[in-house]
Image 1 (cartoon, rainbow, N blue to C red):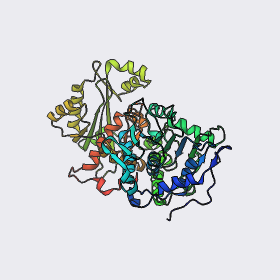
Image 2: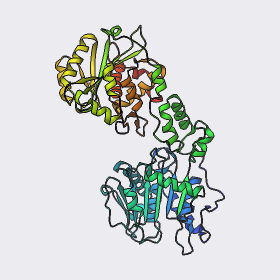
Image 3: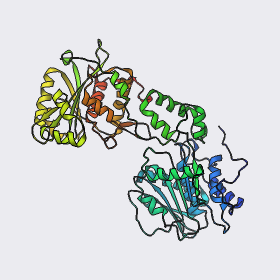
Image 4: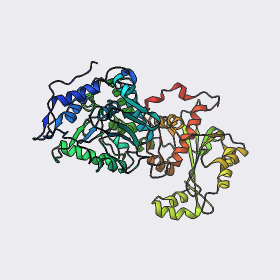
Length: 536
């Protein structure tokens, strides 16, 4: 699709009555950015041609001037879905403020939540400099310090993260905040925006982000202010708001809604990509929030759990342990701490005669802490114990020897081919179980190991080819799962976000992975090889 250029530009409706539009200043800012080149993907090496919405922002910010000739807006809040060209625009604005604004000894800072995110924007800016001969001659790049120095004015662009920054001595001319919604707290934002630019005549705070899912953040606070200004509830002539996104009540599956929310659709990202992501979210309810947040820029509260419990409940099939005697199965062991719940889950892969993955969970708690935990956690551990769904071990810590003996007895009843365990915290017990003749398999808790079986668990649940006997403790834990997702779309259960216990679910996912990989034969053939795991 050809580049969509800005036609018939009109200054923003937020231009004050006393301000004026300087075409000369706006043209210079646009010209400076368009001398740069794209650095990544299919656009790498091509001139940075501003798309119409980007050019409008640049003209409004750099062309709308107060009577004294300085810029009217000192804060810009740009909220936009992913893959719209945020990092590139952020890097270009940072370079413009550092190298093209005529400010002596300008201090421009690129801020992000962590070193990794901060490095992304810096690397883009550094590559832009290297690929622009005029800048390359005048700019010194100190890669190890994440600093770019514009030698003619002795100005610099410096990357900072929320993890590491000094609180004093800033004399700010510009700040570029990339992905403001990922800031862990407001400290860095407050330090950079409150009073640090007082010595400058026209500092610019450029905040660019996707919507988040936590409304108790600095980003949501600024989002609310931007929304209030857009809706006419507040007036602040220094604040420039831009929000591209879908309304909460709009149909998230409608392509017209996608177009409204994604101003670069068809240019930086193909509609086919959004379509595929939408289809995937329709198939898997756990992905709907992620699609709405990242693709439609909606602030979705993480109130929706990952597992739709009505689907989980449909997998309840009453079966007797006896029918599984002698069958091949795989164990998952999760030891969170000695005072907490220990979970052991067996997963039985399908046989030729039977299509189900059967799940048998077992849980233990220290006897002496049971009543305390009931009062503290408001969870009916005592009822579950009386009903036989939860076992207690003597004392105030989990008695691992008792559990080892129990697993040993299970091993005489079922054919436990492997037991997967998290290497943190379970070393001694795994050695003891190995001594009893079990094959122990270390299982990482990162995306690489956890994502395929977690996706498969959802798939089996939706297909109703998973069979559990309605175990209330496991059901409670399934309802507690929150999911963490990386940029590549991999997922894993998030123990930090999941405020209640999910140990049994994690143990089941580990056991399921081994059951899928090895099946009834244990010959190493894997269902993963046959299935397209990425659709979930």
